[in-house]
Length: 199
Image (cartoon, rainbow, N blue to C red; front, side, top):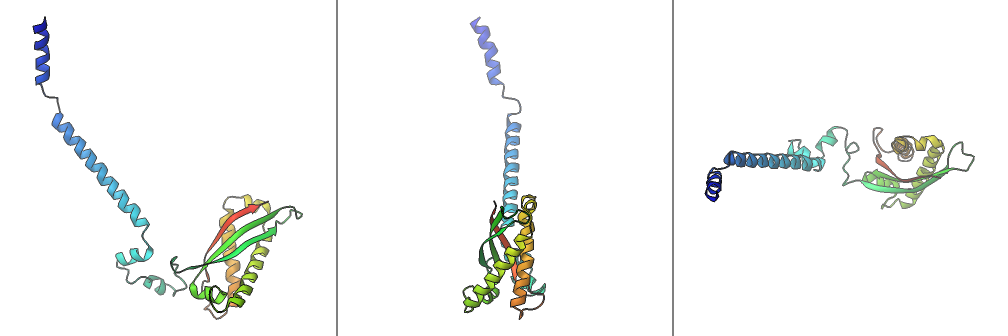
């Protein structure tokens, strides 16, 4: 009986596994496809994080900034590396139709071009005039905040709506006080609101 069991085991050990080489080739090809897909996704993701100037130069777009200058001068382009952030501080006011029991508080920052920041008084010689312009901006924005009701702050997209309204108000105030700029000049590149608190 021992001999019969040995004979049955011997042929099984001698027979190579079916598809051994083809299974190995399939596994290697599968791994190569996965690695290729990973590299492709990585290259795509890294292209999303390149600065706009590098993308324009890589596609034959010419010198960095040439696109923005042709499309409306330096006031039309938005390069975050050259923007200056101006803090307008905390804006606090009562909410409309709350009988003085509810208020809103929000921190506001504005990105402007360096020459506009100097005219507003950020780091330039016009610091005293800049304090006055900032105070005018704060008062105008607080007046804008008074126009909102409680439902406006609890609705979907409230920050986006308030930011776009603030942009219009800031543009109007700066246009009144910095009238030497062209009519199509954009003072504000971006309005950022943080710490919105409705109490």
